[in-house]
Amino acid sequence: MTGMPRTHLAALIGSRICHDLGSPLGAITNGLELLSMTGLGDLPEAGLIRESVAAATARLRFYRVAFGVADSEGILGRREIAMILDEMYAGGRLMVLWHVPGDLDRASARMAFLGLLCLEAALPRGGTVEVRRDLGDDSWQLSGSGITIRADPPGWAVLQGCGMEAPGPEMVQFLLLAEAAAAEKRPLRAEAGPDGVVISY
Image (cartoon, rainbow, N blue to C red; front, side, top):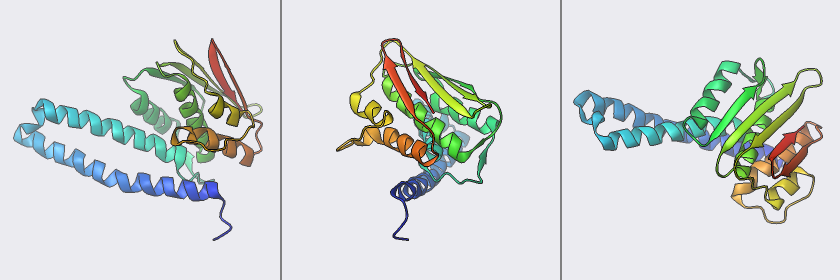
């Protein structure tokens, strides 16, 4: 297994972490349900815990797609994708409009989710992101707009084909999206300006 690509090894690590964290979050949820049977679940502190667990679980489900292993035979249903996105961004500063018909293979879903994380980084004060797919040539476009546009040169330079000497953890989605596009032989384009940001492939 020494010839395993680094990206696949990283995906295996991501899948393992998401899998292992799912159990304790589920246990906390079960504990809150038991507390609710005693009346203690109505306390404000229990409500805060419940909200935090829900947010962590939603992000974990999103990360499982974005950073986990993209099984070529795995399929994500449109309803499941919508549920993951609703849970991930519900009540947040970012609104995601998913204009992609039908189900997706996990590799396509993974690239789209990585692109969402890139746009999320570019919209620190929130905004609107639209995801579209042209079934004719299977091209994708993710466009984002908001009050503040922060297209940091290092991350966007990676999407534009330039390297990065010492990336921080906050840049991992840019690196993974660029490598995924290269593996799928898709030309990746990223544009950023005062009116918004666009990623297409």
